Image (cartoon, rainbow, N blue to C red; front, side, top):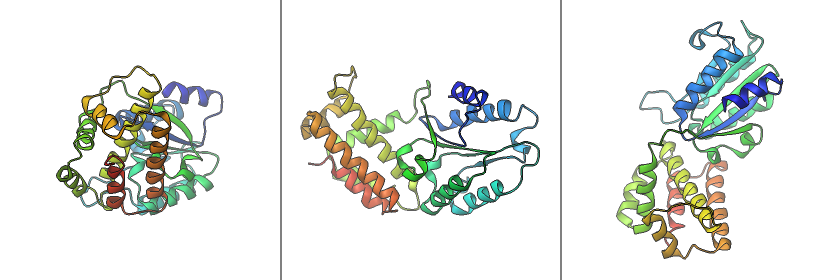
Length: 263
């Protein structure tokens, strides 16, 4: 990721907007901040005290479950002001998938109207949860950490629920999902997409070891033919995109996602 950004900058081809999809947002944020500090700001001042840099992230207050439109409006004002110390202004939106619907629309406006001397980086663990109109305006990077993903266990817990088709477990899962806590829905949607990608690769002959639970879901639903998998993947992808684009009820969307594996 960093080498790509450095090369693009040296060639004067660094895009104004970047969407970075990662399985380790904290590590990616650290690496990205280091690149911005060393390459774009020449280590002249710490990012914490740099008036031409802004980091937007979900506030630690438990009452705040997402990135609010007020935070993005502050970012908009930041870009509207003249830079103070450097020829460019730079911002990062960390865990961009946590933006609520209004915040996402406000971000889109920033991307549409951003001045040429600005750079904005969106870090997300679930690129599919970002508005398509935002994704289309960003250069994209897939940054996979070499560190084992701590959420792997949670992924297999979800697959076990799908394999067992246990109604009680599904209800317990749904209790964590609400429109005020978008993060749980994002995680579930991401894991389901991961599962579909894994079994699609397996059906295409890619050497991939599946868990017993994954095999159970495949066998129970006869998800073996490429045509069936493609149709299922398109259905799930459309459901997730519609939930995002039309700001649909997250719990109802989660029910529909889980029902895709209850045939």
